[in-house]
Figure 1 (tube, rainbow, N blue to C red):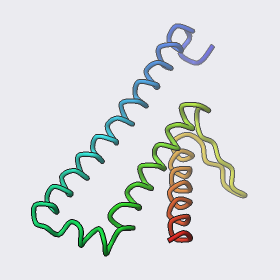
Figure 2: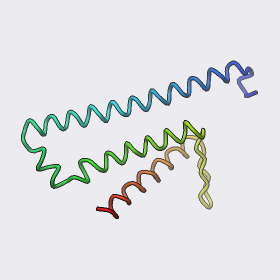
Figure 3: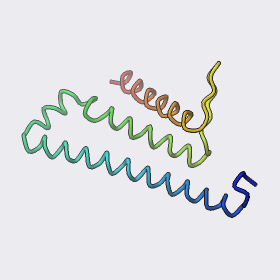
Figure 4: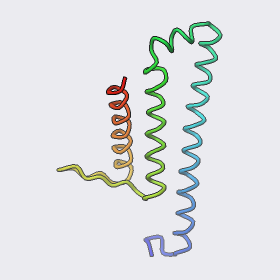
Length: 118
């Protein structure tokens, strides 16, 4: 039993966490999608879209995609394994700090992979 005092509240707390996780994931996807669509619409309307993509592909496509992929990996791990806890020699990250550090590490890994393979 947790500090809330009732197993019934633990069940509802877990359901609330899952709902919040999915709402966050859907919100991030919608905001990113609308932002990308808006930017693309403006670039297509002015005719600069293909030139910008051609000259700055990594900046325009791959870095935002890497950020979204890192969010997906972190949310998937949190959903499957629970709270993220990380220990680096001398430092311990728990709760939200562990999640943020894990996202940064995933994002850097994706960016490094792009840099190496580009």
